Length: 151
Image: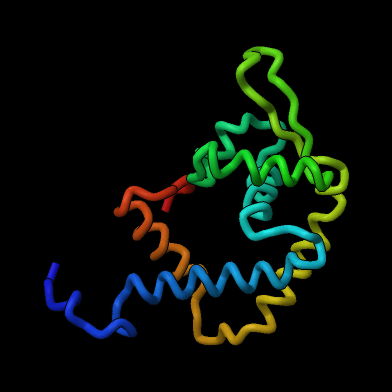
């Protein structure tokens, strides 16, 4: 890699643009999720559970790239708010299974519509979302990040 890329001004640094985009996505999703009293990380947990319900906390953490210390407070808040239930595994008393509540199942479509509305309110014209996602997956994979789906 050419070392001169690190001598560019802040605004021309890839790391800075990725950072700003991540913050922007977080803020956009937080606006959409505000009425549901959900945070962006809580929504990510719900997304994982909407893909596969009744799974071990360990699997949620692996899927999201979150450690148990980060994930447990999120799960506790989701449980307290009635979005999920947690119960000890019958097969391993040390493991906990997380399940979507009826509230989560019923609210999925409304939440997704609120997010779609917020995304549509942003000016994303000229951005090829599928190409960007593919490039980010390549970036994450090369950096040792989460890569659950094949490119």
